Length: 351
Image (cartoon, rainbow, N blue to C red; front, side, top):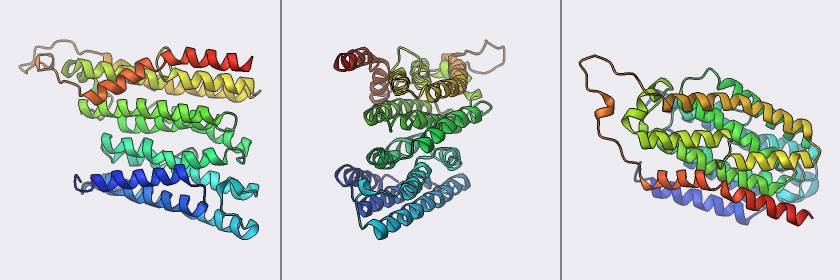
């Protein structure tokens, strides 16, 4: 796998540049296919049945979404002769394209592949799938935002936030919980794209930093289930503390960075008159808050001393965190300080 890392990073960088510099349908579809294929080695990096199953589900799902996209774009070219993503005037074809992009992102009701795929990947590889891989479809939805049906977008976002939180309530596998968390976070990212697309960029940026911090700390702690988190604080208290901070940030509690996009999103939805959408998203976020707090509680808990003839975990040397985890954790803590300034500037411009 180290041999292919430069190829993977170079390909992902090229596809990102294509998304950022082009609005042509064919080029963006090619970039989507390249980014899909380059992630497959990250999933099937070892000969394990779980990894093979995850890569198969990922490939079939992404291939179905790509087929829908090329089908909609071909019909759009035949009917209108336009090749730009911003020139799609047929509402039905636009909706089909948006739903196909929802499949690639992993929103409800097309979310079934996300937890199974993440379960078969390492935490480091999951960072690429949950952040960088979603950047391309998100850019396309950003360009299509004036054309997307508002009812479809609101319904998919509300269902994603609700069902992801509901499915995570009784889940004990941490990787699947991270997958459900990603689905809920992407719902918050896309629910505002019709009203204020710049807020979508801000939400995705903060989500990427926070979810990356969470996955890096989980890999450092080598935990796979909630029960194993009970031993993490004794083995590595600093890393466990960083995990607790990132989990609280993902839940959207102030004064952490994850509170900023939710605050601005609710404020914008209320200003646009979508009060019921804002209320439903807030109620759905309570479901996600429950399993975030459950993870936080287990990572903060300590086991009582026992009389067994075994070496106690809290007497082992403490693991040191690396610079990447520390930097991302500091960003998770301090980015909220910009919220008050941004809010004041927004209000001042409104007046």
